[in-house]
Amino acid sequence: MRKYTLFILLLYMWQASVNAQQYSSATSDGVSYLMKVKDATIENLNGVVAVRILFDALQDIPSRQSVVLIPELVDTARGKRAELPAIYLNSRNQQIYYERNLRTKQPDVLSLRKKNNKPLTVDYLRTIPYEGWMENSVLRLRKESCSCNIHNDRGEDFLCRFKEEKVIREFRLYPAYKVPKAEEVKIRNEKGSAYLCFVVDKTDIRPDYMSNPTELAKIRTSINLVKNDPNVEIKELTISGYASPEGNLAHNIELSQGRTESLKARIERSGIIKGVSIKAQSLGENWEGFREYLNTHSDVPQRSQLLAIMNESIDVDAKEKKMKSEAAEGFRYCLRNCFPGLRRTDYNISYVVRPFTLEESEEIFKTRPTNLSLNEIYRLADKYKNDEDKYYEIMTRAYALFPDDEAANLTMAYLALKRKDADDAEKYLRMVNGGPEKTLNEGIIAYLRGDVERAKLLVKKAADTGLRDAQLQWNEFKEMK
Image (cartoon, rainbow, N blue to C red; front, side, top):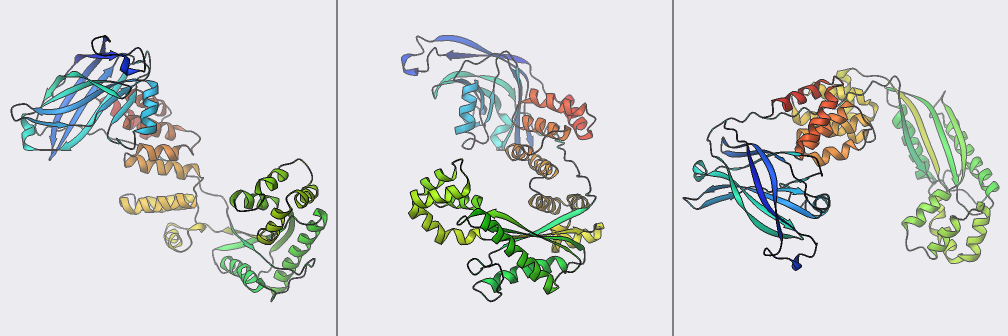
């Protein structure tokens, strides 16, 4: 492989004003832009042409301006030319503009911010399909200056000739994830809400009254789902009652407490679960549910007045009284359409799941995956580490079950980097607080985006902690030519 070290002077027309119409090439000041090309190669890799340019951008770029470099394969004898995705070296403002407006439109473009007083190493690698004429081509770098969306041609420079069937050493990526610790006790919860109907000002449950047959059946189904699972042991059932915000607060608390006690007694008499603690509690008037309803239903009359009163620093009985007098139409509307849904009973069945062997985990993963710990799912995935599709299926399911878990998000970032999807990986890493695995993965993201210097800094930092994947990645950078 041939290496090239040369300096390119890009005659770049910096403009003294953002109003481009005030200037022309005859009146603008010409300034040289300096960059050092360390290596440039063209290789035919089994029908795909790989173009690599490694260079240092040395000079700062004024605000709202860019240097645009466009690699091209050129055969002047045949009049053939193939343009590759451009390289944009941007000032801070131009980089922000690109990220907001152009990244999705130009996904193959390499756009980087050149920070003031700091050299920027750019490692450009792109591929295009091979065509026969390319064996006699040369790689040229077309240069443009860009300001106020006006591009000016600044000529082109020769970089290297085509060398067929050369092997470019692959730059390997070593993203990392972390296996979560095993849960000492697997505590799970089966939750639901029932909307039992009661006679006005009564606490006794009438099983055939209005929608009560359906709501009571819902509770029985949830209990049986857990009770009939041979792998679990129910520890506690908690019943929490809410009242709607009409009437006296103290009376409503007493009423909802009485109603939850009635449900508790009914469950105990039924014998559906035995030897389990059942806790009944009143959570008072459901003002949060009322607020959520108003925030999500723009058709409520006098909605803004109701919300304003709700936000006042007065007790809830005073709020209700004020709503009835100052937003009467809206309050009556909510009384009919919102308040019935606020009178609900939440139930939570807390249970413990036994640990599973690897063989058992495979079956449980198909039938009731919520009974598995994240560690058990990871051990199952490891069984399929040589089956990429199966491994991906298991790990993405793990994330769906534990979307807020740091280890699950770190693994999703790992999988994204395996696909070289920097944007997706960055999204998952936002859910990870820190650690060498996150630092390493952030370094790989920087590399994929062309910021080699930042990538080296982060990977070296992770490698210094002793993380094996980071040390392997650092070795890749040390081998980089």
